[in-house]
Amino acid sequence: MNTVPASRLLQLRSWTLPLFAILCAVGTWTYANRVLVPHQISDSAAHDRPRGNLSDLYPRWIGAQELLLHGRDPYSPDVTRKIQAGYYGRPLDSSRPADPKDQQAFAYPVYVVFYLAPTVRLGFGIVQKAFFWILVGITAASVLLWLRLLDWRVAPSVQAAMLALTLGSMPVLQGLKLQQLTLLVAAMCAAAMALLAAGRPIAAGILLSLATIKPQLLLPLLLWLAVWSLGDLRHRYRWAASFLIVMTVLCAASEWLLPHWIGSFWHAVGEYWQYAQAVPMLEAILPHPWGRLLEALFAGTTAVACFKRRQQPENTGAFQSSICLVLALTVLAVPTFSLYNQVLLLPAILLIVRDRRTIWEGNFVSRALLIMVTALLAWPWLSGAALAGLSFVLPPETVERAWALPIWTVTQIPVGVAALMLVHYYQTTFAAPAGPRPS
Picture 1 (cartoon, rainbow, N blue to C red):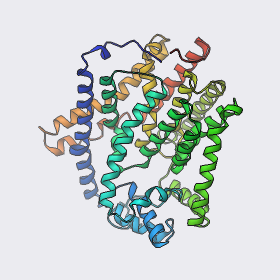
Picture 2 (picture 1 turned 45 degrees about the vertical axis):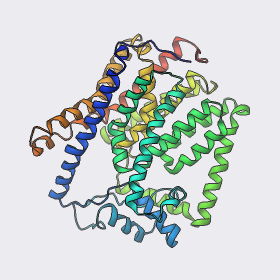
Picture 3 (picture 1 turned 90 degrees about the vertical axis):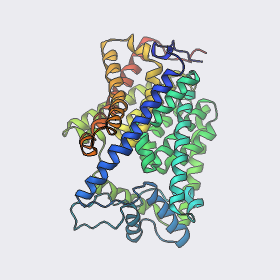
Picture 4 (picture 1 turned 90 degrees about the horizontal axis):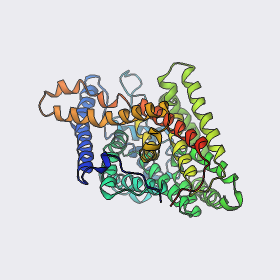
């Protein structure tokens, strides 16, 4: 079992750390409800932009309802217009320049409707509220699952602080507000990796196949697991076999339900990338070709690092850090930049916190990156809490002018975390041979 000497912060009285974390989380949620959302409402009214339920679950739910109850193609233009009527409050009008570009079409694999089948006869208001609390529960559980994967046992008070900070983070807040399925996929990944590390590969493969409702988030992880499996195929084929069997069943059932759905799905994905102008985060924030070059650099160094560890068993620190590194790279490489995708950084952040002393005792670069990442992560909580407090003493229009403060660091956080992970990864690789973690 991995043990890390408690830092001065973790040696404070047991109630101090969780109380501070809860205050940060409450501050972030208060900022969202009293500053961010009111700003979005007033800005939409000023520019005549429509606002409906704005739930990312709604397009999937309507698609499931139309397909299962009425036999209609969820990828069809008619269903898209029905989705827009609920999501935005009215169908989008291309003649209105202020209307959103995101068509909110059904751009998921058809088998997502099987997950939503029990809800299609309920009112969406009930489904929306229930799904919100389901996401809260599984996101909190994912923190404990990542800790299990990392073989890191911490005090209950520290676990409570981690749960509060996670549920009060900007990515999770946005995901909960939108009822984003990314939180479900992230929780499935956490459960699958914890099962794999615990020696239950068949269950891990089943969960990973079910998580492919957002295939772009799973592709880097699946590629790494495929390479890792080839390192000892005789003992590691079972997760891949169960994954392929369940994927075959899901695709076959989807084909029976909606013939030729794969072509419609890829067409919908292609259209989404066009109207949403979907590009990886680095290409969006850096001029061409520097974003693509940096993206290739991160991908190449990650691939080399993981390939060197492909023969390490699933109960080793090498395997654990490889999972964290690949998920951090996923946030940089996925061709859609959305804040809620950064929930996939959670295992990497936990690993950085766990190994903070080792990182600090490294070279100047690792110390500088650790300070930078700490500041980047702390900024949304602290600035959000400050704006939340000011919203009670200053006029709303004054506070709303600063609405963007907590999201200043959202593009830098994934880059900083991925860079620190790579530096730490290579330092530990060259410092000592990889092997099982001490118990």
